[in-house]
Amino acid sequence: MAEEIERIKCLIIGSGPAGYTAAIYAARANMEPVLYQGMQPGGQLTTTNEVENFPGYPEGISGPEMMVELEAQAKRFDADIRNGWVTKVDFSGDVHKVWVDETKEIHTDTVIIATGASAKYLGLESEQHYLKIGGGVSACAVCDGFFYRGQETVIVGAGDSACEEAHYLSKLCKKVTMLVRRDEFRASKIMEERVKSTENIEILFNTDTVEVLGDEHGVTGARVKNNKTGEERDIPCTGFFVAIGHKPNTDVFKPYIDMDETGYIKNVPGSSKTNVAGVFVSGDAADKNYRQAITAAGTGCMAALDAERYLAAKGH
Image (tube, rainbow, N blue to C red; front, side):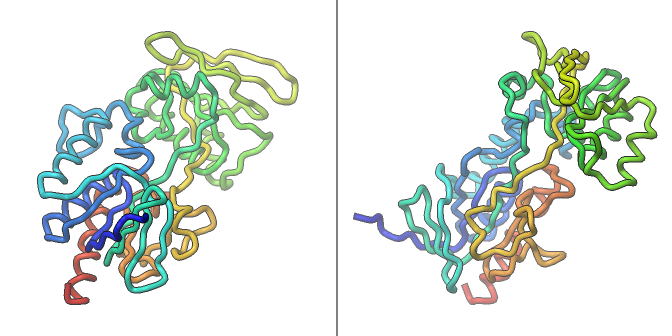
């Protein structure tokens, strides 16, 4: 027998800085929000060892610790934080229907999407190992580049983001080696010229990563292979950055919500509103430009305020 349908005012899907901030604001506005943490409770920040650029933490804080604190803050205002992830939605009517773990059905007046995006990685065993132990693998130069000041780093990627991140690293690091799979960039000409004209960036074309090298303390280098000649070489580095794109976690909403060609949700400029009344978006599910904890938190606040106004206009 199916579970009884639960009826609520505000459902928040996702638990990074955007979701938890939305929960804090929604709970304080007596919207009695229910938040489902999703596949990766705490979001991308749980893979970040040190967060030094979030205001209010002068000594810095680890990503997982910060998420624990945000969750505790949301719970302090009686936000209902739950395990589980949304497997199906129906946004065709006035009441938004959502299914959790394929079994539980929830009818909600408002939905705040805070499902984030997942960084794409190469999938190498060695890469995943050092990513998990927080020892030198990262998908965000702006977040982690500071820890490699004066050191040598490697970055994988060929698009605008990879060029931007390589240029950012070049201002901090002694040397940046850029690995490009093909014999040309995918980036715009202006970004390509920027990295090519930066003295301490070396670009290796037709180059694949074979293995991320390291010891018990972290990354010590990268073994790379020229995919034209088959020649292998080891490049010394302490930081290995992957900039091959992100995938927004938005597939479940595709039948109803307007998105761009890569799956980022389109919001009404200057707001968190989507094309569906009562459904709002925050954080990296809609943001491919900034992708920072602080910007995600800001849009989480916007989504809760927009949801509160929507409910008020409907007389809730």
